[in-house]
Length: 94
Image (cartoon, rainbow, N blue to C red; front, side):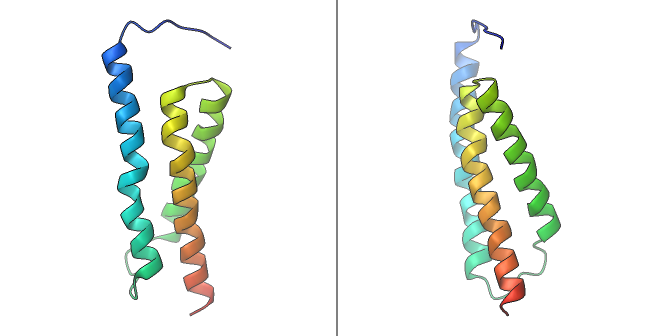
């Protein structure tokens, strides 16, 4: 484990704000997938890889105790996994 003292407090604050915004701006896509009658252009493969990437970064951020990354990637993983589940459900139950 490494410990660092930040000399860029403003950058750290900006990173935290952007980290909070990323999952929020992804919520409309989840809503669209759940409510939409037409899913053309929404790729299960793409969203699966987004969820995989977010999951890996969530684990990394927890392991390295990087708060801005934890704030970003845990909610992002949950939302992106929700999109994948919604796409799979719509695929198999239509």
